[in-house]
Image (tube, rainbow, N blue to C red; front, top):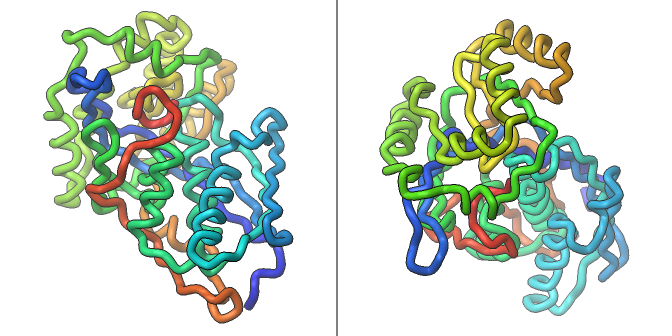
Length: 333
């Protein structure tokens, strides 16, 4: 069936199961080792056909509706690729419903960009390799290549090396966002050599995922936690409240400020969230998302009508490529 009406596509957020800053590089960036996990908290994109060359975006958070929005930038970038390859322009009207909080360490904008790239490549019938799609994603930001496949992945280097892993052990997740912003640049500036990790915890977690073993929750780490808890008292207070509510482990996602607590059963997770909500915290109860769930959420394309080839969801590769305008290639705060 040809694309004649709006298609809804979820853009799943992420957490960092581990995030180790290994040290500063000569180029001023930092080497990272991180295991990323897609989660069920998501924005929703409604993609509707529009006249060729007409690409617009509206959002229920009006301040995010401008040309700088990563989902709209993704549409422009993919359309430019189509023009260069086939000489024809493509249009789309994007409606974006935000659920993932912004500047939270959950990668919401990058997830929106990846969802737009993948869905429009199918709906427009774009004939391209998965590698080309990854290269386009890397131009939008260092997190975006991970979100093309979602699931679980190992991220290394400056953030440009993304290696697909099998789906990790499924977990329930209580997320808590304290009412404070933690700028990525400031978080890096607060680190010293004494804070740097050696990558051992990330390697151990990635190894458990590869073996299909339970996640070693005591080896989930984040280099930024000590300095963020020190410099942002609201994060430290929320951390203590999570533990008091019954969280077995509390970790920071990205450079924060969002915290998450993993649970293997729903009942204690739901009880913890209820206690935190009663205390006035902004919280979500989510779960991990595997790669197949991301694939099932994507629209099918009528390639006969659109003149392209069916594009399967690509797996991340060692050639991911960092990009975007962030001064640091840390997963998006």
